[in-house]
Length: 127
Image 1 (cartoon, rainbow, N blue to C red):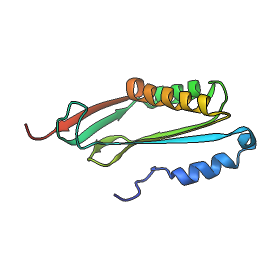
Image 2 (image 1 turned 30 degrees about the vertical axis):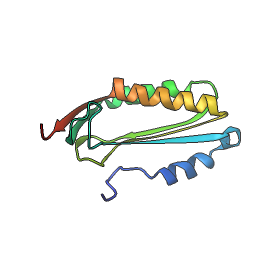
Image 3 (image 1 turned 90 degrees about the horizontal axis):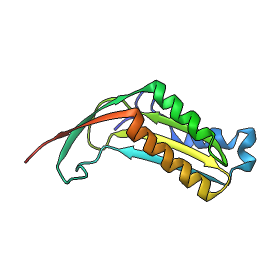
Image 4 (image 1 turned 60 degrees about the horizontal axis):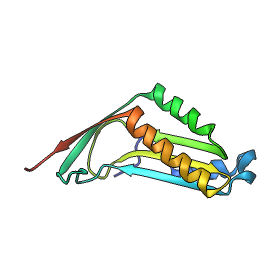
């Protein structure tokens, strides 16, 4: 899998975050990279996924995450279109003061993206 246009670099995101004026107050960064699995949660074989994104809602959930206690860095990129097994669904970066705040913000943000921002339709193969 090659680098896609608009596909971010987590290394670049971290470098940019660490260069921000507020970086001195950050004690932890967490990154999430969601990918298309070969098997669905119910065990069926997945051959791919169609992914649609509500970009306006994505910006709203990012803004909400930025207001969470102790959080100073929030970034997300969400793929779109017909994806294959192993393709990236999303990258999320959260930075904040302490572990508890950062874990909570990352979990909340990924949950919101999965439930409010994207529409996933898995393609299944086999019986």
